[in-house]
Structure formats: structure tokens, C-alpha cells
Length: 433
Image (cartoon, rainbow, N blue to C red):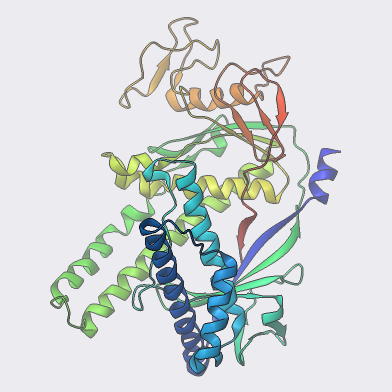
């Protein structure tokens, strides 16, 4: 029954394709982005002016969606240059600005710490912001394998896969290498895989990217960044030698070296993404339920392991695992990482002090169990998630809450009971094709 419910549940996914853009269409897309960037900067200026006015006077004014839409209508009526471009991406940009501003104001209202708040929208500079145009269903169409955008723009799509359903929106953007892409939002149905009856616990690390309760599914550190470090240092030295004084245009040699460095960065990112997706598909295919450490590696950026942790790409691998589990209807339980290296997976006893990173073997002083440190942590994930095969009642030890990614409306409490709560899942996950 659970499998049937997973198969019937509909999700929204992004399907990304490469675009072949001619010089004429490239100029038209860049002109559209110039108009949208101008509107964004005007919205930022208006928002800043409203904030300063509210601080200096008792009369309160707002800068919500209604005021921003009115501003756009007035700007298009008074400016012929804006009217020459389609209104669809401009309206979508206003909506994106409103959402970003509302999110930042909400973080201020709930008094989140400064480091956790979403920043207010900032000005988009011409040479530091890449084009990104959003179109709703009325602003584009697909015909003869080509993408037609409002305003007379037609580009060729490299169809590596066929879209499962007609898309509801599309985002056309350019990356740091100058390549153009289109990202369609498509309603898809979860592709349920055959049940295996197996469960797995996953612990994240630096020496190995992922250590699991199954030796076959351990993910070793691929070291893609370390292998490309020599070439990257070479291009960065070229950039340093060819850099011109501030205020002067960079030379052709500098831009060439900059392009080579960006190309290498892109290659490493794609290698990490490919490794993560292949490993995630293997884990999801062989297991019905996954107990995953809800590890946030951001703090490692300020430690001595920053470079190695960034090369391990724990965040990207975890995201790929969650997306693959949702795609195939598997149960993914996120376990809080607190004290997972201090608890014993056999008896549940906790050490009196935190283990140093140099100590790679866990020895329990209560039951005498000895096992590799990361393997013990992976088994603790199963115990806390209530998936431990050794437990007859499938109850789990006391610990922080476990969040479910399989059924978004249910989360587990520390006493093992369940309660209904509002899902915090993001509305989209990405399938790049």
C-alpha cells in the first residue's frame, strides 16, 4: 500500500538542457536581461528609500508586491526602452524580488541570528551578474524541438532526454563559462522501485565521504579537487601575472586564464555531482529505508579541514541522496548528528567525553564492543531512526528528533511517538538531464 501511495504522489522537478544560441539571439537575450536588471535595481532603490523614510518619519509606508507592480507599470509607460521587451520576465523578476525581500524581513521579525538571516536584495552589477530570465506558461512554447520565448526569441534545445509532461515554466540562464541553459519545471510521478526489505545507516565524514552499515555501499573520498589543484594553481598564477591595475580593463590574456580556471572549477563540480548521483542511485535501489545523518558541513569551512571537506562535497552528496530517495519513493530519515560519535550502537551507552578526531576506533566501556568509529556512528543512525534490525519492537534510543523525507507530514519525537506537523520540504528538487 505504501508503494502504491508513493507511485501516486506527484512531485515537481527541474529538467535542465543545454541551449544552442546564435549571435543574434544571444544579443536579444542579453538585451532582455539588461531591462530586467534595471528593473531589479530600481526595486532595490525603492525598497531602500522606503526603509529610510520609515526610520525618519512616523508615517509608515510599504514596498510590497502591489507597490512593485505599480512601479513596473509606470516605468513601462514612461520608458520606450522597457516596452520593447516582453513583460513576462519583468513581472517574474518583480515577484522574485518580493519573495526575497519578504524572506529577509521575516528572518528579522523572528530575530534569527545575523549569520542565519537571509540578506536583503542587493544591486545587480553588469559585469558580476549572469543573465537569468523566468517565463511562465504564457511566455514560451515548444515547437519543432525549439524553444520560442516571448519577444521573438527562438533557440535550439539539445534534447538529451524527452520531457515526461508539458512544462509549466522555464528559466533561461547563462553560467560562468558563457553557456546557455534552459530549466523546465515539470510535474512528475515518483518512480517506485521494487521492495528489498533492507535498511541502511549513513554517516558522513572527511576521510571517507560516506560510511554505511553496508561495506559494499561505502563512498570513498574521490578527491576530484585535489587532482585538479595543480592545473588550477597554474591558471591562477597566470591571472595574477596578467592582472591590470584597478580601474582599467583586463587584458585578453587575463580573460583567457580566467575562463580556463572557471572551466576547471565547473569540471570538478560536475565530477562531484556525477559521483554523488551514481552512488545515491545504488544506495536507493538496494534499500527501502535510509537513516541519514543530518550533517551540515558549513562549520568545517572555518577549520583546518576546510579544503578536504569542500573536496568531499558532503552537502551535494546528501542533497543528491535525498532527491533520489524522493524520486523513487524511498523512506529517508534525517537523524540529528548530536552525540552520534559518543553513543554505542550495541548498548546505547555514551562516553563521558568527546572522542578526538585522531581516535578512529570506538571502544565501549560498558559492553566492551569495539568497532571502527564511523561504522559505529552509522549503526547509531539506524538505532535512532528505529530501523535497527536487531530490535524486536523497532524502538529507538533517546536522542534528538528524526525528520522524515518519505512522508513529509510526519516527524518523530524523542519518545518514539508521531505527530502531524507542517512540512518544511522545498517545493522543487532537481533532475538535470
